Image 1 (cartoon, rainbow over the protein chains, first blue to last red):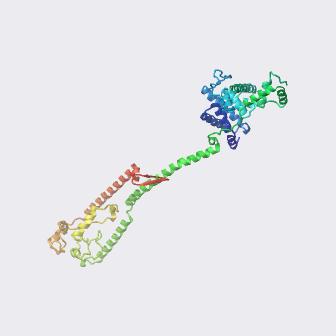
Image 2 (cartoon, helix red, strand yellow; image 1 turned 180 degrees about the vertical axis):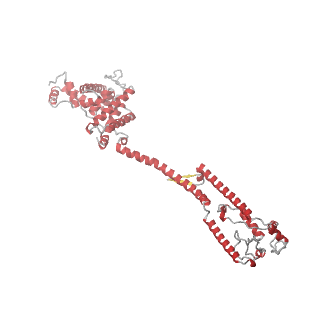
Image 3 (cartoon, rainbow over the protein chains, first blue to last red; image 1 turned 45 degrees about the vertical axis):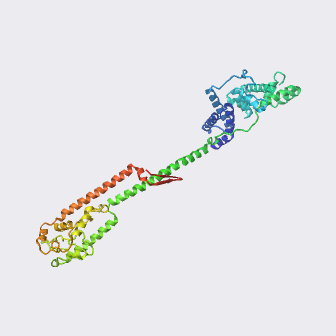
Length: 165
Length: 312
């Protein structure tokens, strides 16, 4: 990958990677640092890396940096169940004024970090199970299972909210 | 492949994720047509898909560009350090001109004297030569002769003349000494005193002239000096009349003030004055070097839109 192609990658993927990180961390400055670090690493290996794999490489580096950041801050929770003890009504869930989008965002926040990352990689970036597995270090089967569980949880939440509304 | 009540959810999720194979899609669609309640479940799952929204832009994307980053850094370097360099150059030039002004003045003084002084001395030497030639051309019998030079007697000349008729009348003709050396001609006391005063004071501008160009004092008799100190006029008193063979005049001739002794005194005084001038100048330069900002006192330095005035 040439310098020009690297700069094209900046144009194409910087915003997407930033969205992926900031929606997981909810902290803009930390997300900015992780994105910059990811592009630093990409630049170090840009000569040995073809441009076609640049996006996957960027998201892989960004995802791992993000997980490291979360682990350092003890915010990683591998529990794949909803915190049922939190009542739905008391959570910052949507009321009659909120639309489906805000309800969906709330449902996303109820997922753990891995599930949230899988959903975003699938819906925002359109990655396949295999590509998501490459980014997250999971097998395609694991990606499929984790992603399906995340969708069902989100559907369950939305159904509950629909009943409340 | 068979889709039933037990596995339809996995097919729905794979269909939602776009992971279902093309051959499986018609099978799933036929199953949904047969089970309309499952259609509602597919709609709920579709609601879990994140909507495509505007992507937030990375706030500092320019920092990620490699080529542009170098240009930005280079521009920032020039922008920040350019002004510092310009200020340093301005201060250096100001110090250089201030120091060089004093240094060149000192160098000129020490080296060969200023051109004006040298020119003056040269003209004086020419006059001396002319006067001496005139004396040597005169026959000894014609002595005492008054050399009617328009200028004041030059240093080293043996005969003093003055354009003032009163003073000229007071000059004393001098007899030629037996040794062939013309003794010093007495000159008017006022003129002698004036010359002596000028040479003793040694103005600062003339202090650094070369020693060979220093005018020598005229030799005067003690009586003339005494008369000058007592404020006596140059009228024709018995004391200051032209030499007519009186005892007083002979006394003057018997104990003349030796020329080389006075010359050495003047040289020593000139040397001392030169040393004093050099010491004073060196001290001044040392002070300027040790107190560089004192050179900027009362001056104003402009750097771009900023001006700095040094008041203290």
